View 1 (cartoon, helix red, strand yellow):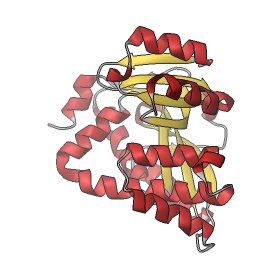
View 2 (tube, one colour):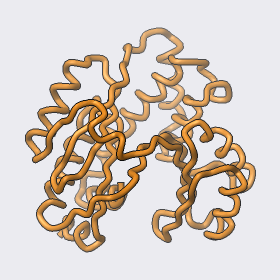
View 3 (cartoon, one colour):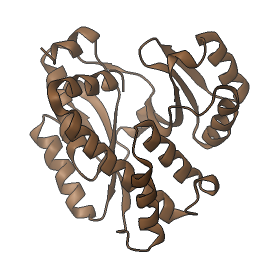
View 4 (cartoon, one colour):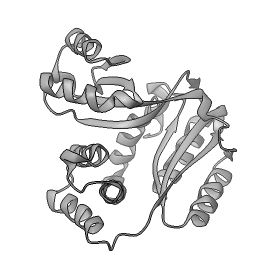
Length: 249
């Protein structure tokens, strides 16, 4: 996952911000609708919906758009979406996990396979790369929320598994999958609502990518992100800031 947020920032600077934002809102709306349909339509009573709504707010999604996505599920006119996970390999030997929410499994599979094939990757079998990742909760706070030591101390007390700090990206707290809700509640009491709280695939180790493979890998990830059915792409790549900045040249 290293470098992915910086890659997104570079794409925004290249003039794709509006298109990326529209696509993001569509994906967030879909997740909200699916979450609301899978349980209570009240975020306070539905942990998955609460996470989806919080993440939408973190991306500045308008309240009326959030409410409309929930009402779509309550009204019974929402499409039936299936959650599917694809695993594969990208340029430089990188392992990728692609999470999909789709109303047509055959279309999604064909699209994902085509995107991998056209961008120097290979779609693998189920389980071919997921063993190299841990399924975890991830909580994000801006750098100004607390000092590095204070956040680490609070994370440990809350029962988190790990915490990282980057001056640009802020605090990232990792939890066991099943502990995410409890840790979010504890950290919220100390620092307020987190910027993000979600379930992620965290790589156990990273694969360095450099040179021409960087641009090839980013084209693959960008193409996957652009697909309407794809919700999230996770990878175990590590890219230097210099190589990432070269993409915007």
